[in-house]
Amino acid sequence: MLGPIRFDASPHTAQPATTAHSDTIHRLVGQIDGLVSRIHDAARRGHDCTDLQQQTDQLRTQLRQELSQEIANETQRGGLSQEVAEQVVSRRYNDSEVDAAIKGIDSERALGDLATAENDTVKNAGTTNFRVGEATAENLSGARAELKQSVQSEGADAILARHPNDPAVRSAVAQAGLDIAQDNLTAQENQIPNLHQVRAQDQGATSGDAMKNLRGADGKPLSLAQYKQLVAAREQVMIKRTALQHDLNDQVLSMRTNGMSRVDALSQLRNEGYGDTLGATSDTLENGKMPTTIGMTDAERGAYYERNFLDNPATSDDAKKAYQSGQPVILAVRHDTTLSANNEEGVYDDRFVVLQKTSGGVSAREFDSSQDPTTQYGDGLLNDFDLPGSADDGQVGKYAKNDTPWYQSFDTMSWHRTYAPTRLADGQTIQLSTGPDGQQTDGWGTLEKLYTPANGGYQVQGDLNGDGVFGNDGQRDHKTAGGNEFQLHAGKADYSHTGTDGCVTVPEYEWNDFRAATGLFNGNGDQRVNQAGNIYYVQVNESTLRQ
Image 1 (cartoon, helix red, strand yellow):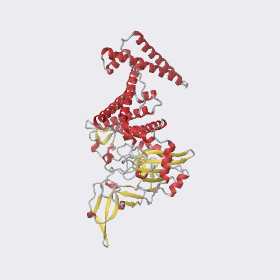
Image 2 (tube, helix red, strand yellow):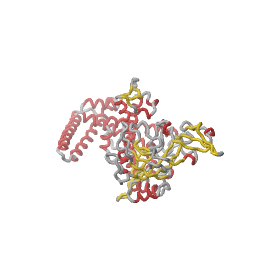
Image 3 (spheres, helix red, strand yellow):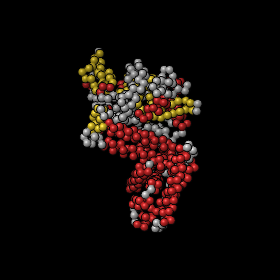
Image 4 (tube, helix red, strand yellow):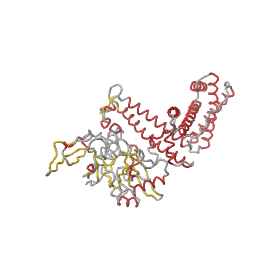
């Protein structure tokens, strides 16, 4: 929850603009300009600018106070709206510092309105009065829209500079940044009428400087430059969402410092509208939402994942020994996702945790991941399962295929072959290894990979009935893989889909950080932690995590 916001504007009695008042504003602007010049000069000389910056900030605060009074005078004297009064004052001085100060006034007002709306939301949480609940939700939505407009106008950095030690303001501004990024992505997508008619896997196909399959609003092939703008917009949404998670983590830690429990802090933030980002309100599975570690200290997060790594039946003794010796390991936590999710393009709603014992304790670094397949690579990557019974014994859904003409009878037993989407099965440890790829590229990103064993030996799971849901076919949906076709790598670099048809992937923007955390790659894609270039990978389901 945002704390009390100290407004630059306070109630003032209406009074006509005076020469003395105008002189004060001009004087403040002149002093600020002089200090800014001194700061630039000092920075060029490599001198410390802290004192000069503090003086500048103090003068800018005074300028906002003076301008707030003048704007209030205009609204009361002339019956003008706030917006028109600000325009009048802006034109009066025609100065960039004045314009910036007016934007700051708007931002502080927006933060104040959001603080009020969040307070009301917490107070009215659980109300049975429909009208009260609806009005509270509308007020919160309106306040967030107001702040989003301020962030677009003034910029996030300028707002945060006035609130350097307020995690609630950082969360609010980060949410606004995510909303802006999502709006930009939607606008980009709307400029490509046939975007959702083209299979995601085929969107990035190029032909010279144009896209092969996509058309712009003018009906002409989309330019490569336009598609790159779309890719950048997709990436920004993911980056902004991750930034919001980090800010919310800091906010919960701050709330805990002030005496609130972590669970209560998460619950309050959920009431304030951050539920989509928070996931669950605890560190165990809750209503189908991935357990969250937001609001844990680094030590708590390390102990939580260490406990779930060492105590999970899926973790092999060799993996435990490697971890205890200081080698990094990967704990892969899966959130079950249907094949139909997100237009069959996959979702980064799973989690990789790179866990390592260090001299300072336990390091646990979390990364978004996708551990369920998409349909984007077509039927060619379906895996075959030989099953008892005739293919005519049952029909399958659209995601699988029965090989009807091909079945064999042995004595009284009939067998048929089903081709099905397949993923790594939960509940096992696999030793992954670096491979020969180095830094190959598909034109959009690198193709460095970690490979499963070349001779297989690990378990995979198929969606045998083709309904897009894993785990409802009984134990017959498991089989032992015979090769290393299931790999770990970066997702599709243009973010059109998660880049998996059974492999497990990390979003492109997190890949460099992920590979650095594993220690297995250097700039040439070579292993460097140990000569073999191996790392243990433990695949578990989120439902097995324990507090």
